[in-house]
Image (cartoon, rainbow, N blue to C red; front, top):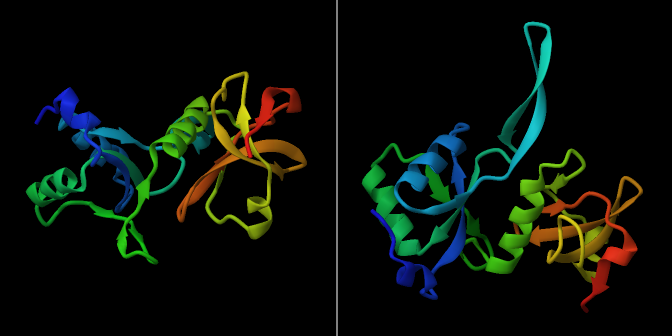
Length: 184
């Protein structure tokens, strides 16, 4: 089920958020990757203690969440072909009663921050109104160059927050003022 480049450029392609049950996000992601889908599962490093030894392992940062870039029709067909045992369902926007779609730019910024896997990156599941009140900025230098978001302070440190509306947000590690450009 390979995808042609022209299909990818079609305007119906979007990032969809899928809820995957029972901690099977990575397994389902691998199945989607094998079928030719573009996928993303935010990952982080966690310390696990086993038999008195601690080690750092790579685990999903947000439980049961997988992003897929495709058309809704193509994802529906894939999930239907999986049958009754398909572990994934679309996340729904309660206001519009449509599947949650994440615009390309916020998704690219979210992936860029998430892929740094810095210990200081924070995933925010609930965003308070106070955090939303910030200056819109673009990071001009460093590992987050090009990321657009809102300035917030978390743990007494200046960060840039990228929000995936209605779902969650991610905040970068500390960002110096001289690395930022105000955009609005």
